[in-house]
Length: 165
Image (cartoon, rainbow, N blue to C red; front, side):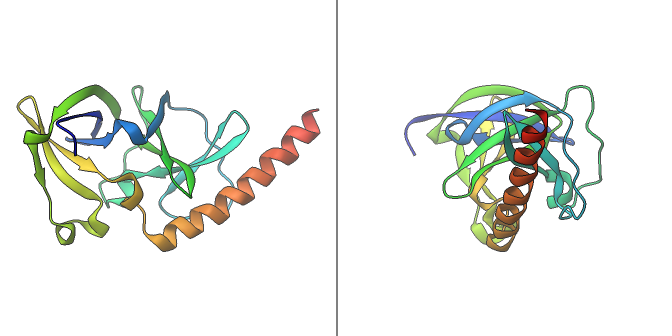
């Protein structure tokens, strides 16, 4: 890890968490999501991002937090995953984009969090922030299911676009 790195910090319930800024494609206001039948439990829906189907994950459900409906300040953080394309996550609100110091990072043992999804705790100002790994917030089997679901949703989007043309 270099001496300084950027984080996109967000609020999830009463916690602060972050993704490395290099993994974040964009932050967008909460949008109307497609809700096809048979959604996997962790999915909030599918975002139509300029004609591209992007699965939207509910971190509440994924981390077994009390369910919350998206609110006035809820946002979608669109993440770039390498081979899997994109996913988006619903967050209560993005609070900041910060430069963190490598010296402020306290690694978390991979065995101490589900699938090693939290890599470290980073001190941002006086507050601890859980640094999440975009690649590990979902399991390999879940990534496969998301890829299949993304293909189905993408096919439906193409069909709808053809009807409109």
